[in-house]
Image 1 (cartoon, rainbow, N blue to C red):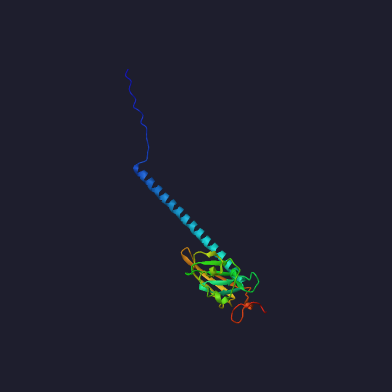
Image 2: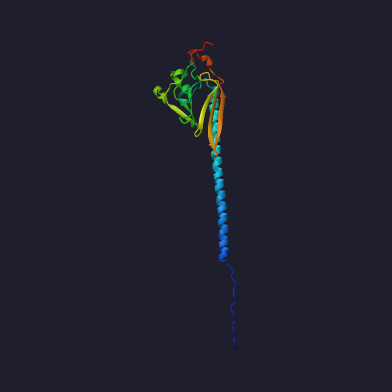
Length: 213
């Protein structure tokens, strides 16, 4: 008896066609591009936020430090080289301006930063008329060192404005520009002298050796 061979059962195999693969690749590319763009945007936003926060921290610190310095100082001595010379306090009580009692608020030759310059020595005394005539790094001849504190590292158009000229100044305004998000913003620090020592000035505008009042 002849046995008939049964045909092998056919297995139905299903797969992606070339067109389907191409479509899937295109969709995947679009999704990846969107994710990359979103990630870049978030990273840029974070960088801008960090830069803005850092700038605002500098502004707050500068505002507090400069306003406190001016409010409690004895005199605004002058504007040597465009910087503001401040008699911070009479530390030794001698009624004279000692070098270690001076603080310079510097704006730089290009008026593009704000920093404080303080000196390491309390002696010798210096007269007001000499302060405006002092040249760069004059303190080296007095054997003292300078210490700098950077307030605003990058700014522009720094200006010092007074109600009246030093040393009779009773009110000071310090203004400067800072670029934030490609926009220049104007900031201003205003302060009035609470402990102005005008009673120490004689008729010529110099400080007398003793207070007769």
